[in-house]
Image (cartoon, rainbow, N blue to C red; front, side, top):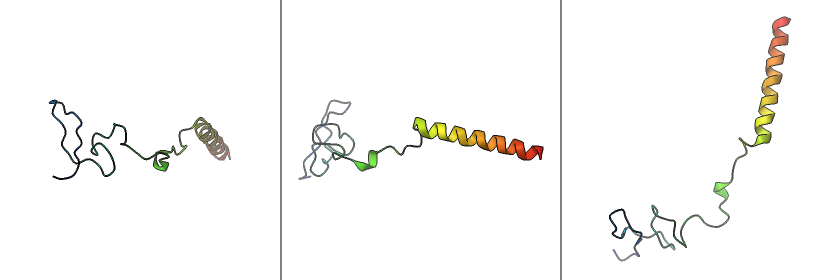
Length: 76
């Protein structure tokens, strides 16, 4: 009970009172205040590129090539 408390307001209007995350002002559930959240330059939040327009277009071309090759094999 000696640790700093979150202090974010709950729906009831009372303070949260959950322990604040180490080195931060809010708990793990409320995080949005200054000094909370992910560290700057968070590498875990980078996009993987699977849904970029280039990747989607590349997959469409591959699928078209596969369909045409199946059709050609069916003719043979």
